[in-house]
Length: 323
Ligand code: 8YV
Image (cartoon, rainbow, N blue to C red; front, side):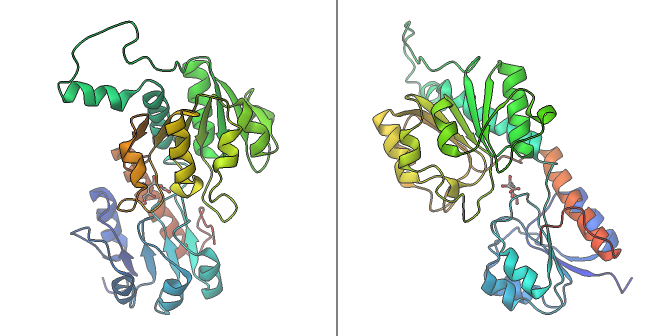
């Protein structure tokens, strides 16, 4: 069929998603899953009505400004849209969508894994067994910090934050304290305690998990001043965006012991430029941005992006429109 809209798909997507794309559209697929340069991306978009990118494609104001006139929608395969200049898209009249909801469970699973792993020294222990350095057992061997029954602070009580709160409360009897742009209705709060500011929340956080988007206001949110008001021995977890943390400040606090341990899945300048000091620390549990990396979730993200495209091409408002 000739008149199927042309769509640039920047990364290799799950097979089922690519099949569906091929039925309804004329996708330009990236079979080798190679990262495109800005020039390639602009060139490949020639004649495309839509781009389906991931968070790995930096869509700056300049790049958006240079996209061919044919491009009318950017349907992201991600919930975070910090890689994409929304103002630039708006001023070009390009619609932007994301994929919320479908990755909340998977990402909250990784936040829980990081919290448990950091508290119970999982990566340290694993390295010990693998390296055949594990020789003995003693009552003080690999003693960590118990999670059950502790206070968990959450910054950003959106979809992922709420799943994390529920799992921590129901699974580990944790008491939930949170800060969010606005207080949740009582039924969604489910007993969590709200604080108007990050500063008011932090002194209560034996554990702290970040779940807010990276915006100009939240960049560098966890800095030295704020780390200083966390309780001694706090544990910090980040599955949101690396930009929320000032790396130098976190590493210093991990070295001094002010922060007992951290669990990170996202980083400033990931993957190549991650803060080198992290690799030398034993009290940090590091994962390679796998929050949404389950088969079920990656399929669901693809189908959600497709649903947004389908709505757009049917002339209706895509449900996940962010610009
Ligand atoms: C995805 C994420 O893996 O959706 C997001 O914002 O950070 C992820 O968990 C990634 O965006 C895929 O594009």
